[in-house]
Amino acid sequence: MKTRAKKPASTSKPAPTSTDSKHVLPPSSPNPPHLFILPRNAGPEARILSLPHPVTSKSTRFFVDPEKGVYEFTRVAAPKKTCRSVLLAAEEALDDGEGYVLKEAEMFVATAIDGVLVLLPAFCTGEEWGTFYDRLFSSEDHEEDGEGGGRYAHLRSVFQASDAGKALEKKMETAMRAVCDVIEMGDETSLKLNTSKLAHLLYAKAQRMVSKGLPPSISEHFVRLPLEAPELSVKREDSTLSIVDEESPTTTTITASAEPEELKHLLRLRTALAYLCSNYIPASLVPQLQSHFNALVDFAPLDVRLAEIAKLKAEAVALRSLGDNISRKRRGEMDDEDSMQRAETKKRKKEEEDMKKKNVSAGVKRLGKVDTKGMKKMSSFFTKKS
Image (cartoon, rainbow, N blue to C red; front, top):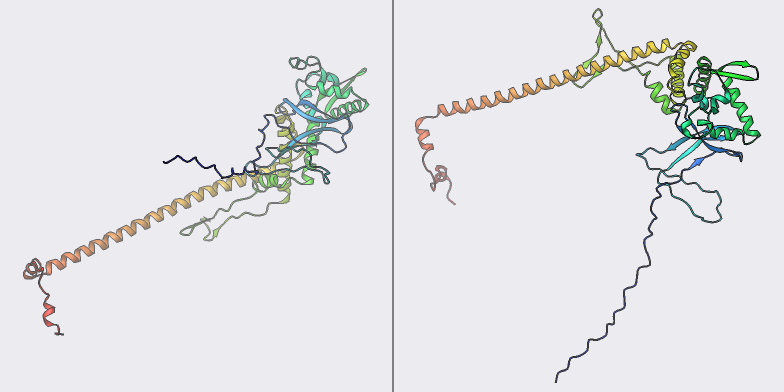
């Protein structure tokens, strides 16, 4: 009698679980922190304030230290096409601690800025006279902000917080006096912006920038390239064009020559002034300042040379276009000649074949039409027997 045997117990052991689990990163923060590089040994009363930007008058972050002055934040970041990372750590760390990974390797560096440039938005609007305090902290200035003192309310809190703040207020008022017309009326001193004095201040700053040297990227793009005269000769493998004097049989070619150092200095100075105006001066003041700059320095030789270079570049473009057209035309002519030669060769071969066919006799033509399948060739009868 057959009985159904029980299924034997499974002897296989469970598969060991993997101990190497992947680490899951936490989700990115929607509001990540920013990295700020502040001045060393900043005072305890230093603050990050919201003040009007000199150009746009929009609320912008500034670092104000009553003991050292005002600083702007300059964004430093790697190009978008180049991936970069920044590691900040102590030289000797006793423990690992908890770090933070920033998605974008950028930092905001606090760089010193002249207080006059920060206060310009308060002095460039309107031509009426006013005291330093009224210009900055007038109750009628931007009442829509909902704050007493308007756009510079945060700065007033720094001025009134300590003796160092009061000293900073006196320092900034003295700086504004240097670029304003001053009228003493009893105990009050009224100020009014003088664009000529402001132009002298910016001109002195531009001279210092030129003496210390412009950044290489600015010098390359705004100084060397604009003063580089092009070559007016267009060289190709098949054609060479140059300017020929009608009265002289010689051929002349204009090449780039070294520009005088005076022209380079003028262009560096103009570049520095343009940089200051575009980054720190309200747009309404730039035309007035430009007329004062032209009175301080003569840019006429530079303008003449730049006009000559522009003319040479236009001629070079025209000659290059002409040379390309001639090269294309010659290539087209050569292609036409080659096609004509091929057609003539084909025609000649066809004529020779037709001539051969005409010279063949009628008997040979009839023999050529005979079916010779299965027949031996005539030469096979004259071969030696093996």
